[in-house]
Image (cartoon, rainbow, N blue to C red; front, side):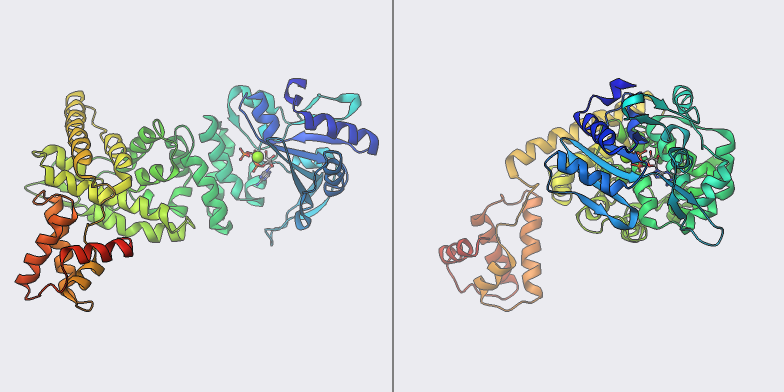
Amino acid sequence: MKECLNVPVFRIISDIAAEENVKAFVIGGFVRDCILNRPSKDIDIVVLGSGIDFAGKVAKRLGKKRLNVFKNFGTAMLQAGDFEVEFVGARKESYRQESRKPIVEDGSLEDDQNRRDFTINAMAISLNSESYGQLIDPFDGVCDLGNKIIRTPLDPNTTFSDDPLRMMRAIRFASQLGFQIEASCFASIQQNRNRIKIVSMERVTDELNKIVLSPKPSVGFIMLEATGILDIIFPEFQALKGVDESGGQRHKDNFYHTLQVLDNIASVSNNLWLRWAAILHDIAKPLTKKFEPDLGWTFHGHEFLGSKMVPSIFRRMKLPLHESMRYVQNLVMLHLRPIVLSQEIVTDSAVRRLLFDAGENIEDLMTLCEADITSKNPNTVRKHLSNFQKVREKMIELEARDSIRNFQPPISGDDVQDAFGIKPCREIGIIKNHIKDAILDGIIPNDFDAAWDLMVSKGAELKLDVRLSKEELKAIAMVRGS
Ligand code: ATP
Ligand code: MG
């Protein structure tokens, strides 16, 4: 296993272990990823003794002033080149029925390996001179890696009941690595699923986001659903599953459709929030579903209701509530617009409005819409894609001419107030919208002079007189920076 140890910090740790007569091992994710040939920047070191003391010595040898010590956890972390190295003393954990917090005692390497979550995460490599580079693999993790199996070292019911987050981690590793969860382990997750409720939402969401970011996220979501965990942590997504029939007509299963859209997005983008937009684009379909005899199954307004559901879902899941959430809301809200557009004659005005409403998100919106075409009929797919191409061409043409994407109306609300010498009132909004609509509809160009003329005529209609000349307002607006 020596090829895993060609990072300089391992030699230093090994030297200090010899000098101090302390046993040290690299363990867990780094060992797993090295055998899998996956690059990994986190190194976990376990020592028989105090992890914090040992880390202090390594830091000193490296000439490091910074060492992050977490006294409560008995761990310390330092940065060595590109690598984050965490040190911990080997420990034994025993869980009691009545508490989630284990009793932690110093332990042997074997104790420490026993408390690990999966066989593939329990492997260690010796950093000690007499056995440098030797793999210590008590549960045959190498074999499970080869067979692509997630399995717990001990009885799965104990492992999952002790720390229910491990259920999410099992599914997350299966999704990230494309592995199977061993059958008794899977059954145990089903059985223990309700215990996920005692884990904090932050930790659950951390793992969920790793599933979302995995190469083919549907793998993880299908397991979340099959184990019953999805219904507990994300009932809105669970509700997408199923097909209703009325008058011999069936709608598509929106759970599998959404997963396909998510996989499509995952194959072209690593943007977590674009992936979340895929997850949520049809989230309101169950709530808006209706059978109308003339039309069949409809989901009117699911894009509006869906975008309204985003904040409460984000809040409950402890996802960030600012830009990322607004971005997801915007995409959910607009996800039908390019499709509607491509089915009609593509007017300049409709494309300008789409550019205005999507702003900087327009490229991602188009990517989402293309991913949303999950028809099995190649002719339908081809037709939609070529219509989208037309919309894209029109967007490029209009954007070059009118710069709508970062559109700031050439006359602001403050400008309108100053021009007419009025205080904030309803008329200002009317005039501003009138100018905006005229620009988006291509009635006037996107410039100050044209907007001025329109403002004056609309003002006259509303019985308002201008108090300034065009040049005076221009000068004021310039100073204001609008
Ligand atoms: P990644 O860093 O890619 O998320 P990892 O396996 O390194 O994967 P970490 O969360 O960094 O995961 O944990 C490091 C190691 O600590 C794991 O490999 C595992 O041995 C152990 N571990 C982490 N979380 C748990 C847990 N909840 N129960 C038992 N062991 C755990
Ligand atoms: Mg790690």
